[in-house]
Image 1 (tube, rainbow, N blue to C red):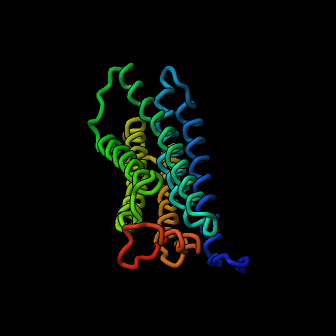
Image 2: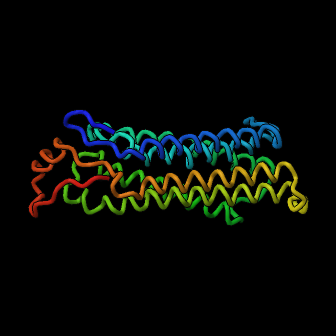
Length: 252
């Protein structure tokens, strides 16, 4: 793919993989909606359908939107770094708000029904993911958006931020799979092994989640697809007083 003057060329395969990831992500959302609509009665904030708000919000927030936030630095390769940082942060905030609605829904539903909380592996993993997600965002905001962090400090933390971002995303996908399996066993029980239509559809949804997570992780781990440092970033780095060892801005 040819680049405009002064812009780094975009790898030929990258747009195809990004488009494929979005197609998979939207398919995951659609199949989740179909599953909840056909076999779980839809969603509502009151009554028995309140529980269904939880899986829908978690898939939208901590799977789809979190993935898109991680891909920002791959997709917007030639935009100003601060612009991509703000978009990255805003998508994470939106994902957090939607996920928080999902958490409130399930805890409120359990309270009204008198059910126990936080006893299953899915719930433990879910709380862990949510706490890690919030912590990752707060630390990332402190280092990359809030004024005051030195360039050298940002550079040392960036690899950890990138790693934990991908790790939390994978944990989110894994937790969604645990929750899907738990929901099927609660409702279908022994019928699950009889290839019930709901079980088959939910299994397809699980495979789509795995495929989505795999494609997103592949995009994130291709070193040549990282956002290249821009000329303005190279010049800006020279203004940091703590940069004494000749460091250059790395890509995220």
